[in-house]
Amino acid sequence: MKLARQFESTQTYMGRYEYGEDLIYGLETFCQENAITAAWVNIIGALSKATLSYYEQIGHKYVNKSLNGEFEIVSCSGNISLKEGKPFAHLHIVLSDTQYQCLGGHLIPGSTSVFAGEFVLHVLTGQASESPELSRCLDEKTGLALW
Ligand code: ZN
Image (cartoon, rainbow, N blue to C red; front, side, top):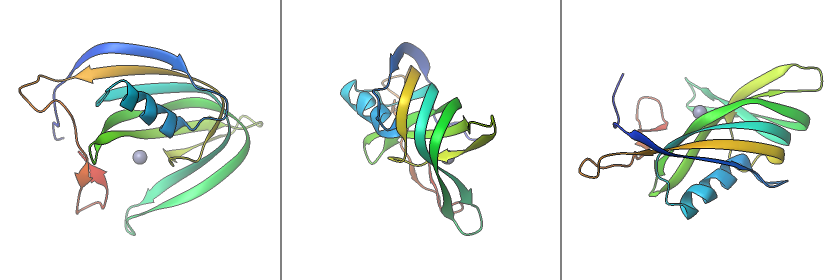
């Protein structure tokens, strides 16, 4: 394991999404408006569409699957950090369909439409003398933007 930064959990926001909003863009906008640069997040609710993906470890590319229909957000969790100086949301999600079957994966930005959604956002604050924000940059070995 590699320690990125040590934080204190300083503040917690609870709120809901507007109908039709995107999970990732809504969260990133909220963080930008509230100057949140590091956080962890949990979301539950329901979606009418989403694109899930997994990262092809050999090919270094995401493989996507688009879903349309009625889905419960069984679990959606992730984090906020900085990428190119802006709040960046990295979320993974498990959805259940009308047959109670679950699908999950990495969530693609701009791919969701919220029917209803509740979030709990735990803001993390570091010591000012020690670069408080996490920042993502390209990792050559994986091809991913990592801390
Ligand atoms: Zn991911």
